[in-house]
Length: 230
Image 1: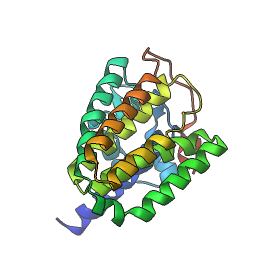
Image 2 (image 1 turned 120 degrees about the vertical axis):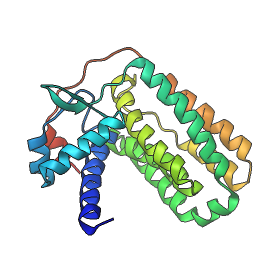
Image 3 (image 1 turned 180 degrees about the vertical axis):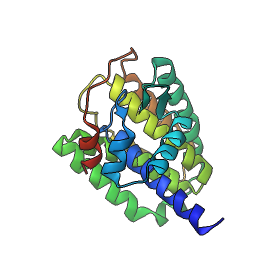
Protein backbone atom coordinates (compact mmCIF):
# COMPACT_ATOMS: atom_id res chain seq x y z
CA UNK A 1 0.00 0.00 0.00
CA UNK A 2 1.46 3.37 -1.00
CA UNK A 3 1.91 6.29 1.34
CA UNK A 4 -0.55 8.33 -0.78
CA UNK A 5 -3.25 5.65 -0.50
CA UNK A 6 -2.62 5.32 3.24
CA UNK A 7 -2.91 9.07 3.75
CA UNK A 8 -6.17 9.14 1.78
CA UNK A 9 -7.62 6.29 3.81
CA UNK A 10 -6.72 8.06 7.05
CA UNK A 11 -8.37 11.26 5.86
CA UNK A 12 -11.55 9.47 4.75
CA UNK A 13 -11.66 7.71 8.10
CA UNK A 14 -11.28 11.05 9.89
CA UNK A 15 -14.36 12.36 8.09
CA UNK A 16 -16.31 9.17 8.77
CA UNK A 17 -15.37 9.38 12.45
CA UNK A 18 -16.39 13.04 12.73
CA UNK A 19 -19.79 12.39 11.16
CA UNK A 20 -20.33 9.17 13.10
CA UNK A 21 -19.54 10.83 16.43
CA UNK A 22 -21.94 13.68 15.65
CA UNK A 23 -24.65 11.13 14.84
CA UNK A 24 -23.91 9.01 17.91
CA UNK A 25 -24.15 12.08 20.13
CA UNK A 26 -27.42 13.15 18.46
CA UNK A 27 -25.97 16.35 17.01
CA UNK A 28 -26.75 15.08 13.52
CA UNK A 29 -30.24 13.62 13.54
CA UNK A 30 -32.15 11.31 11.21
CA UNK A 31 -33.15 12.92 7.93
CA UNK A 32 -30.69 15.80 8.14
CA UNK A 33 -29.09 16.73 4.80
CA UNK A 34 -25.32 16.34 4.64
CA UNK A 35 -24.21 19.09 2.28
CA UNK A 36 -20.78 18.25 0.90
CA UNK A 37 -19.64 21.88 0.67
CA UNK A 38 -20.44 22.49 4.33
CA UNK A 39 -18.61 19.34 5.44
CA UNK A 40 -15.60 20.40 3.36
CA UNK A 41 -15.66 23.82 5.02
CA UNK A 42 -16.20 22.72 8.62
CA UNK A 43 -13.81 19.74 8.58
CA UNK A 44 -11.30 21.45 6.24
CA UNK A 45 -11.43 18.40 4.02
CA UNK A 46 -11.03 17.55 0.36
CA UNK A 47 -14.34 17.21 -1.50
CA UNK A 48 -13.32 13.85 -3.00
CA UNK A 49 -12.52 12.56 0.48
CA UNK A 50 -15.90 13.75 1.75
CA UNK A 51 -17.65 11.97 -1.10
CA UNK A 52 -15.72 8.77 -0.35
CA UNK A 53 -16.63 9.03 3.34
CA UNK A 54 -20.32 9.47 2.56
CA UNK A 55 -20.25 6.52 0.17
CA UNK A 56 -18.68 4.35 2.87
CA UNK A 57 -21.29 5.42 5.40
CA UNK A 58 -24.03 4.68 2.88
CA UNK A 59 -22.74 1.11 2.60
CA UNK A 60 -22.96 0.93 6.41
CA UNK A 61 -26.60 2.15 6.31
CA UNK A 62 -25.73 5.22 8.36
CA UNK A 63 -26.24 7.62 5.45
CA UNK A 64 -28.57 7.48 2.46
CA UNK A 65 -27.67 8.99 -0.91
CA UNK A 66 -30.44 9.82 -3.35
CA UNK A 67 -30.20 11.15 -6.93
CA UNK A 68 -30.76 14.91 -7.15
CA UNK A 69 -31.05 15.13 -3.35
CA UNK A 70 -27.58 14.15 -2.19
CA UNK A 71 -26.70 12.60 1.14
CA UNK A 72 -28.66 12.66 4.37
CA UNK A 73 -28.51 10.96 7.73
CA UNK A 74 -30.39 7.68 7.52
CA UNK A 75 -33.91 7.36 8.92
CA UNK A 76 -34.24 3.73 9.99
CA UNK A 77 -37.76 2.34 9.86
CA UNK A 78 -39.31 0.48 12.78
CA UNK A 79 -38.54 -2.88 11.19
CA UNK A 80 -34.87 -1.98 10.82
CA UNK A 81 -34.82 -0.80 14.43
CA UNK A 82 -36.02 -4.20 15.62
CA UNK A 83 -33.48 -5.95 13.38
CA UNK A 84 -30.64 -3.82 14.74
CA UNK A 85 -31.51 -4.86 18.28
CA UNK A 86 -31.70 -8.52 17.22
CA UNK A 87 -28.20 -8.11 15.80
CA UNK A 88 -26.97 -6.33 18.93
CA UNK A 89 -28.20 -9.13 21.16
CA UNK A 90 -26.29 -11.69 19.07
CA UNK A 91 -23.11 -9.62 18.74
CA UNK A 92 -22.93 -8.34 22.31
CA UNK A 93 -23.67 -11.78 23.74
CA UNK A 94 -20.72 -13.09 21.70
CA UNK A 95 -18.54 -10.21 22.88
CA UNK A 96 -19.32 -10.93 26.53
CA UNK A 97 -18.57 -14.62 25.98
CA UNK A 98 -15.03 -13.70 24.84
CA UNK A 99 -14.16 -11.78 28.01
CA UNK A 100 -12.26 -13.46 30.85
CA UNK A 101 -11.56 -12.32 34.43
CA UNK A 102 -7.98 -11.72 33.28
CA UNK A 103 -9.26 -9.32 30.61
CA UNK A 104 -11.30 -7.50 33.23
CA UNK A 105 -8.30 -7.15 35.54
CA UNK A 106 -6.21 -5.75 32.69
CA UNK A 107 -8.83 -3.07 31.97
CA UNK A 108 -9.87 -2.35 35.55
CA UNK A 109 -8.88 1.33 35.45
CA UNK A 110 -10.74 1.87 32.16
CA UNK A 111 -13.93 0.37 33.56
CA UNK A 112 -13.65 2.43 36.76
CA UNK A 113 -13.22 5.64 34.77
CA UNK A 114 -16.08 4.77 32.43
CA UNK A 115 -18.48 3.98 35.29
CA UNK A 116 -17.60 7.27 36.98
CA UNK A 117 -18.22 9.14 33.72
CA UNK A 118 -21.64 7.47 33.44
CA UNK A 119 -22.59 8.57 36.96
CA UNK A 120 -21.50 12.16 36.35
CA UNK A 121 -23.40 12.37 33.07
CA UNK A 122 -26.53 10.95 34.71
CA UNK A 123 -26.37 13.39 37.62
CA UNK A 124 -25.99 16.37 35.26
CA UNK A 125 -28.85 15.12 33.03
CA UNK A 126 -26.97 16.13 29.89
CA UNK A 127 -28.52 14.06 27.11
CA UNK A 128 -25.46 14.22 24.87
CA UNK A 129 -23.10 13.13 27.64
CA UNK A 130 -25.46 10.37 28.79
CA UNK A 131 -25.80 8.97 25.27
CA UNK A 132 -22.04 9.10 24.75
CA UNK A 133 -21.12 7.42 28.04
CA UNK A 134 -23.79 4.72 27.90
CA UNK A 135 -22.63 3.83 24.38
CA UNK A 136 -19.00 3.91 25.44
CA UNK A 137 -19.60 1.05 27.89
CA UNK A 138 -20.64 -1.28 25.08
CA UNK A 139 -17.72 -0.22 22.89
CA UNK A 140 -15.31 -0.73 25.79
CA UNK A 141 -16.55 -4.29 26.27
CA UNK A 142 -15.98 -4.94 22.57
CA UNK A 143 -12.43 -3.64 22.84
CA UNK A 144 -11.76 -5.75 25.94
CA UNK A 145 -13.00 -8.87 24.14
CA UNK A 146 -10.06 -8.64 21.75
CA UNK A 147 -12.23 -9.70 18.80
CA UNK A 148 -11.69 -7.04 16.12
CA UNK A 149 -14.44 -8.32 13.83
CA UNK A 150 -17.08 -8.23 16.56
CA UNK A 151 -15.81 -4.81 17.62
CA UNK A 152 -16.12 -3.40 14.07
CA UNK A 153 -19.63 -4.81 13.67
CA UNK A 154 -20.71 -3.35 17.02
CA UNK A 155 -19.29 0.08 16.17
CA UNK A 156 -21.59 0.22 13.15
CA UNK A 157 -24.57 -1.08 15.13
CA UNK A 158 -24.02 1.52 17.85
CA UNK A 159 -24.17 4.42 15.38
CA UNK A 160 -27.32 2.94 13.85
CA UNK A 161 -28.73 2.51 17.36
CA UNK A 162 -28.14 6.21 17.98
CA UNK A 163 -30.31 7.03 14.96
CA UNK A 164 -32.99 4.67 16.25
CA UNK A 165 -32.93 6.22 19.72
CA UNK A 166 -33.13 9.73 18.22
CA UNK A 167 -36.25 8.72 16.28
CA UNK A 168 -38.05 6.39 18.61
CA UNK A 169 -37.09 6.85 22.26
CA UNK A 170 -40.10 7.81 24.39
CA UNK A 171 -38.22 9.86 26.99
CA UNK A 172 -36.17 12.95 26.22
CA UNK A 173 -33.47 11.98 28.73
CA UNK A 174 -32.21 8.39 28.36
CA UNK A 175 -32.65 6.34 31.52
CA UNK A 176 -29.48 5.52 33.39
CA UNK A 177 -28.29 1.96 33.01
CA UNK A 178 -25.38 2.32 35.46
CA UNK A 179 -26.65 -0.51 37.70
CA UNK A 180 -27.08 -2.89 34.77
CA UNK A 181 -23.64 -2.07 33.44
CA UNK A 182 -22.15 -2.59 36.90
CA UNK A 183 -23.86 -5.98 37.18
CA UNK A 184 -22.33 -7.08 33.88
CA UNK A 185 -18.88 -5.98 35.08
CA UNK A 186 -19.29 -7.87 38.37
CA UNK A 187 -20.34 -11.08 36.59
CA UNK A 188 -17.40 -10.86 34.16
CA UNK A 189 -14.91 -10.25 36.97
CA UNK A 190 -16.26 -13.37 38.69
CA UNK A 191 -15.87 -15.41 35.51
CA UNK A 192 -19.62 -16.00 35.22
CA UNK A 193 -19.97 -15.52 31.48
CA UNK A 194 -23.44 -17.06 31.35
CA UNK A 195 -24.77 -14.58 33.92
CA UNK A 196 -23.10 -11.66 32.14
CA UNK A 197 -24.70 -12.72 28.85
CA UNK A 198 -28.10 -13.05 30.52
CA UNK A 199 -27.83 -9.57 32.03
CA UNK A 200 -26.71 -8.12 28.69
CA UNK A 201 -29.67 -9.65 26.85
CA UNK A 202 -32.10 -8.35 29.49
CA UNK A 203 -30.38 -4.95 29.30
CA UNK A 204 -30.78 -4.73 25.52
CA UNK A 205 -34.38 -5.92 25.77
CA UNK A 206 -35.06 -3.06 28.18
CA UNK A 207 -33.44 -0.54 25.85
CA UNK A 208 -35.61 -1.75 22.97
CA UNK A 209 -38.75 -1.57 25.12
CA UNK A 210 -38.04 2.11 25.75
CA UNK A 211 -38.62 2.77 22.05
CA UNK A 212 -41.91 3.77 20.47
CA UNK A 213 -41.41 1.98 17.17
CA UNK A 214 -43.55 4.14 14.94
CA UNK A 215 -42.20 6.31 12.14
CA UNK A 216 -41.24 9.81 13.22
CA UNK A 217 -40.43 13.03 11.37
CA UNK A 218 -36.84 14.30 11.61
CA UNK A 219 -35.84 17.50 13.38
CA UNK A 220 -34.49 20.36 11.28
CA UNK A 221 -30.92 21.08 12.37
CA UNK A 222 -27.93 23.07 11.24
CA UNK A 223 -25.07 20.97 9.80
CA UNK A 224 -22.31 23.46 10.57
CA UNK A 225 -23.45 23.77 14.19
CA UNK A 226 -23.68 20.01 14.62
CA UNK A 227 -20.14 19.37 13.36
CA UNK A 228 -18.58 22.30 15.22
CA UNK A 229 -20.14 21.36 18.58
CA UNK A 230 -17.71 19.42 20.74
